[in-house]
Amino acid sequence: EVFSVGAIRSRTGRLAALAVLHDVRAIQPEGGLVTVRRIVDDPEIEEAARRVVAATPVIGAIHMEFIRDCSGRIYLIEINPRIWGGISTAIYSGLNIPLLLVANELGVLDSDESVYRPRTGVTGVWVAGELRRIATFLSRMQPIRATNALAEFSSVLFSADSVADEFAGGP
Image (cartoon, rainbow, N blue to C red; front, side):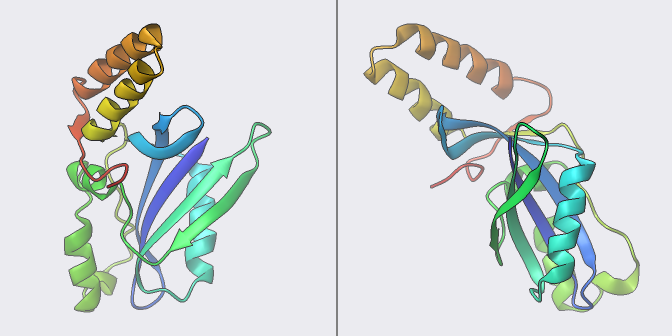
């Protein structure tokens, strides 16, 4: 399993915001650009992210990627001092990242000890990526896989807690 985690580290060094997104699906079955991400509550991934945030000197937005192997071990595979790809999904779920970053720069984010979090269960769908995924199956002459991919795309896109997130997966 792959998880994208977005965090904000305040000017005083505390964790101020945290969003854990489970990478549900990618264009290629073996991985790559993510087309569907879901905001989840995963205490183990959150704890790993807290440790990383505590150990980094970065102030502001931090993007981390973790994998959980089949035995349940969690590994940090990437960290970047930037806003993450699933930001639109996080914003849609109630975590206003741009506002929190401005508050951090103004020094008002540390006026309380809250850790801001998004509403879980919200799914971001990179529509162009999902369509590219379906087209890939068609170009490989795999009509059954393309039909299944279209059904998966439709069920996710039209569910109550989904948002068309053109920035969820890639360019």
